[in-house]
Length: 408
Image 1 (cartoon, one colour):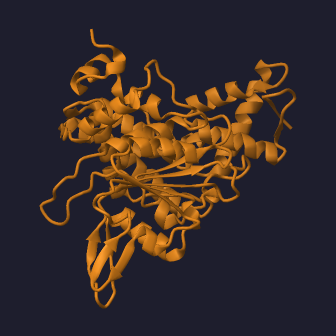
Image 2 (cartoon, helix red, strand yellow):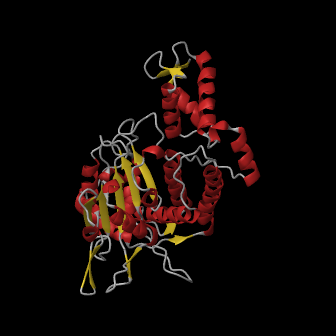
Image 3 (cartoon, helix red, strand yellow):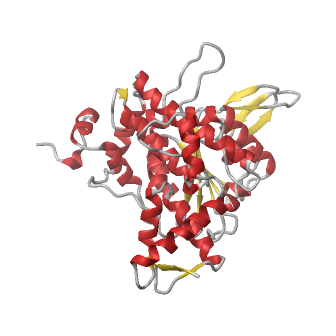
């Protein structure tokens, strides 16, 4: 009998194990959030390039940006990803130059840097907030279009940038401040952050790390499996695409209201980008499981990952199983303050919830109970944690006992 350590045929492994979970266990490290681990595996697998009737093909490469607390050993995590990447390069924003990242032109010919090198499939950029403006602008163009345009007199052309990019930086003041909103602490230029498929947050405490019942893979077998998974081109069904369209419709409604609200400081992504990003993530999830068709489960997984990202960035998109027409959706959002995009309204609702729950507890309301109750009302975990911190900072709630809350 073939032992687990000996690997095996990818399709056989996929039938015996949850191979996406095994890959996640392989890259997972202490202090790294589950969302970051899962997004990293999806990036390693990648989506599928799609041809269009008009215009350039739609890329399959997945771009990820992570704002990681300085207390997290994120450099070590990137080193682990490098070992699993097909062919990769590593850059540091504090020392990278346009020539080192993009390349140089001599005598009318290009010597490409890693971002334009067709032999480099993955580029990992640490401390990307320290990139100089020229390199940062080039990175934004590459993430946004998959190309870079040279305008030199002896080399005026547009070059493909075919690889995936993983961008990371620390928050604005190195560590996350629990009393400030996440968008206020993002150190990347908005043009770069909003050009990624996923913009994720990795805090330094209370991190929800990846866990499963699966075992990690030996490096050699992980590399073999990833190579096989990348080659798949899963097909789509109509109803799977409808799951994505349903989320995007809700996102568009919430995002448009948020943009018009001057009190909101948000990272809002273009609707078309959100749709294509979810498609790539769903395809990668199917490929990681060695599936030939993108299933509803794959699409729902991708939607959940994107929803979590948007929630951390301050934009709460309802993920109810029931389908809401626009009128019903808007009415529910107006009536339920927890679904509001106005922070003051959410904070007041949370304070009232804590006050109401005080009757049930003698020594203050356990913080976990508050979060669980607010979550049932539609408030995401990360938002609730942030709002509790704001209430403490404003002196509107205090802790009569550790991890217990009471209104003032």
